[in-house]
Amino acid sequence: MSNYDKGARRERELLKKLDPEGFVGMRAPSSGSGGKKADGEERELPDVLAGDGDVFYAFESKTSGNDVIYIDGEEIDDLEFFSHMFGAQEKIAVRFDRMEWFFFDPSELYQTRGGNYRIKKENVNKGETLSELVC
Amino acid sequence: MSNYDKGARRERELLKKLDPEGFVGMRAPSSGSGGKKADGEERELPDVLAGDGDVFYAFESKTSGNDVIYIDGEEIDDLEFFSHMFGAQEKIAVRFDRMEWFFFDPSELYQTRGGNYRIKKENVNKGETLSELVC
Image 1: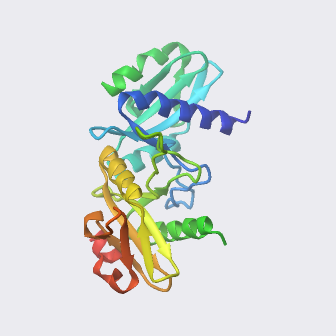
Image 2: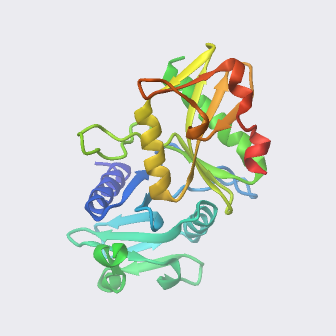
C-alpha cells in the first residue's frame, strides 16, 4: 500500500472515530490544490475538515510506522492559513502505528532550527486524546 | 465531456473567480461521502467550500445547458446539515451556459409540491451576483 493510500485510509478512520461523537467531516480531494501562494508554490489543503455545529476543525493528519514524525513548516503555515480563512480551529492529528490518535495545536509542537516541526512517539501522549478533543 | 467532468470544471471555475476576491476554497472529493443518514442513505457533501476569514460558504453548485434546473430536496437538506455542522453559510451556486454565476439561499428558491427545488433561467438574475456575494 502506498503512503498516499495509507494516509487516506487513516483519514477515513479518523472520520469514522469522530462520527459517534457527533462530528461530520470531509477529506480534501487527492488532486486538490488550495491555490498558489505569492512565491508560486501550491498551497496545501487541510487533510480533513470536521465539525459538530459547535466547533469546526481543520486537521493536518500525520501517521507513521516509525518513532518520529517531521512536519514541514510550510504545511503548518498552510494549515493555519486555511483555518483562518474557513473559521476553523487547526489541529495536527498524529497517529503512530498501534497507538491511538493524538491532537496538537501547532504551537505545542517542537520546532527545529530549520523551521520544521517534530513529534516523537515517546511524547505523543502529551497531545489531546480524541475524547478530550471532542468534549 | 461527462456531466461529472463538466460540473467539476465549473466548480474549479467558481473557485478561480472567488480567488481575486480574497477567498480560498476547496472542492469535495469526487468519491467522498459525508457519512450515512438515519435512513441508510449516503449524505451528500457540499460541492465547494470557500472562505475569506470573515465569511465561510458551503456551496451546492448547479450548472445547466437547458432552461431550468431542478434540485432534489434531499440535496438541500444535506447542504443545510453540513453548513450547520461546519459553521458555514449555505448557498446554491447556479450557472446556466453563457451566463454568469448567481447565488441563492435555499429559502429563495421555488419549491415544488414534491419537496424539490426549481430555478428557471429567466429568473436566475434574481439571485446575488458574485460581486454581491463577496462584498
